[in-house]
Length: 263
Image (cartoon, rainbow, N blue to C red):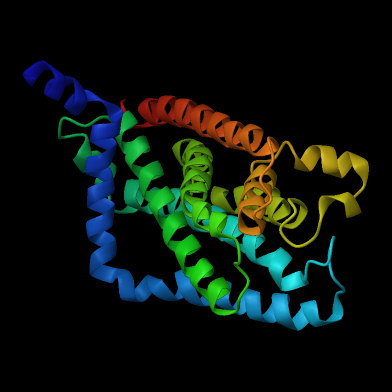
């Protein structure tokens, strides 16, 4: 039993959990300053785009109203945004401005633990965002299938995926301004061409093919299928794609972070 406990405590997941606890405690002290971005912004998007712009859009697909189509896309997209923002700007500030990573290295934890902890916290932020969006969507009657509850663990997986990718950027960024290119060249284009706002079949074929290589596309499709109760074998492939992105991001981020922090 002692040997098993020792192995668990030496694993990056356990060390990451300790980093996650530190971020959780910091959030609990300042949650009232951040709750607006988590709950209010997706509410405005659903109202303004879903019902405002949606009033000028006919049904999408087989009698699906535009708000019903948009809601799962917003769940996936805002899970991406919250995980990404925290694992880029938030993590960079913790590393370079507050020197928290340097302090952590004086404990038994290492760079890999830091990366895992930041990724776990980014996924937690994604989950909080998904809960907020789903509450709003439920209020407006946009979630009708009991399978929609599974969108919450999927949102956590989406958070793991994008936080892992984002930590690669954080570990290699020379300045905080470099994050702007990450958002401008990858995150925002992905937001628009990954099936969040409209079906991919309206796009040129080459763009459709490129879109499916981006992690937000399977994420949005997976959440939309669960919310609609339309379960297909493709969901397993989409899940595996997100897991693959997560593992690759963790691998690269851990190595780049070790190279950055251990001189």
